[in-house]
Figure 1 (spheres, rainbow, N blue to C red):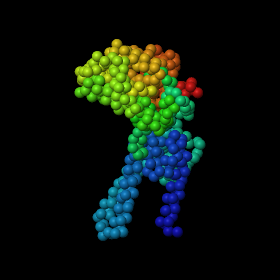
Figure 2: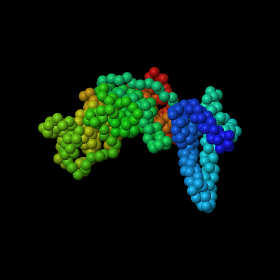
Figure 3: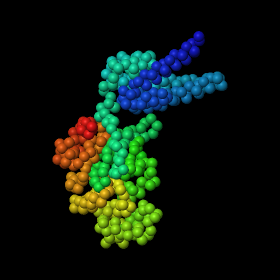
Figure 4: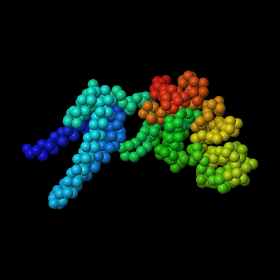
Length: 435
């Protein structure tokens, strides 16, 4: 058997051994086995296991570039052997890329040794016989990761909220963002049910995923999830359900060069069913303006209104369709205490009519008595938004052993954010309590 055939067989055997090894190694880090058979992608996942993601990306680029240069070199040798200078340049480029690739591999292997708490002498075996190393580290029960950032976060709950024909049922497996192999998990393992007629505070520190969660719930940015509102699947029936969901974002989207009445009326034409005639529509607009104290200003331009009045206009635009679910992201931002309480009291009264209201606010303690429950999001050690608590206000205070909502946020915030850094602890404790 020729040398070339022997090399092909050895490369094939090593490929099989590496694949088997990674097939068993990735689940140790919560990574799907599927990635072990994905060309290039598995380099990135192996680097994630080693907490060397940047080296994984560099490795993928270098391997791809090396492959392309190899093809160019063979074409030059076969079709234009007289182009000696060109062949030498390509060969030199392959050598340089190979050295860079080796550096990335070395950093990844060193990272694996640190994660598995093994001697760095293993790096030499990984370089010399990659297939054997991958097989041992993947298949042996004695090789378990102990220092990985991927394993520092609280374990997943494995629970699912039961379906119901009343209220909001949220079962989010995960919400990711990014491209190709470089995707970030923003939310994971979030399950809860909100009954009709309740006003819920969505609490969490900066970056915990509050806005991402409400975007997922409303269908604005879909997650890997099943969201139902009064028995209807929000994602599958979005064209219908979007009229039953009101969402007031943090940033105002109202037209300033129109009257208050026209602004709300135009939105009513968009959000109310076509079966509603003009008379009913105008009645509904006037009713909403009355509820939010905008009747006296309805013929004035929005641009001439105060910050508090503009907030009421924004809310009226969404509330005009009388949604079953009403989500508001910082509706009291920029308002003084009296105006903020007046607005929150109005939302509280609306919830008593049978709707579900979810509110994000950075000053919850001044209106906390108006809320029926608290849903706390926390960012775990993997920087992923997780559910750390859901229950009544008094239960939240007892669970976190704090008297204020601000104190609760301090518990789950990281140490470098001025918090106590106990997010993983509280996430895991809540799962133990609810199970």
